[in-house]
Image (cartoon, rainbow, N blue to C red; front, top):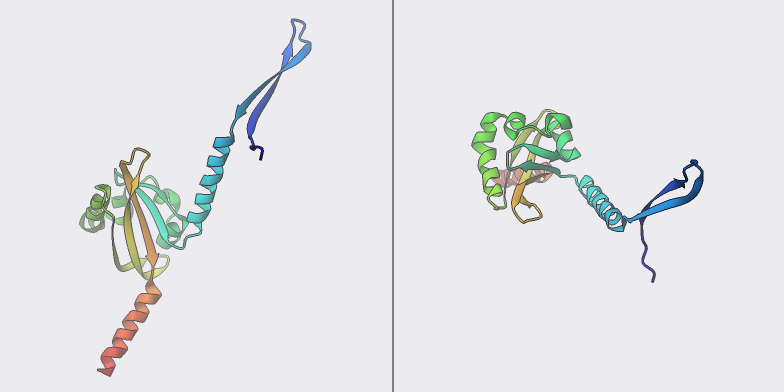
Length: 171
């Protein structure tokens, strides 16, 4: 089958010394790879935006590089109050120093990790989240940041706690 080629084509009139058009110069650039890359990126963006999980990327400098819409909704913060700002500023210096920085440091050293805990959010209230930290690697395989994914498992945790309570009552 014939290969589909995508091109960026520019037409420029060619004029003589009287400014009369005597021809056309046509320049064509093959942009097939670029377009396919853009389509693949759009597909990935669609996949990520469909996730109910909160997703953020924190750089080696402990600054938020990006944050998924679910992350923004859960925290109740606007993108410009998170992206480009240090984690310590967004989450609080004490929480950062005592809890988040040690986890981020392990992740930035190449270790995947996670934990689960109750969190209080102004916009969504008290939620139980499973949080994972995964190293984000650049094209040279060096760790360039930490991908933080938080899954809301509140309903499951509440059901587990209710089951444990009812079991304790029966014993």
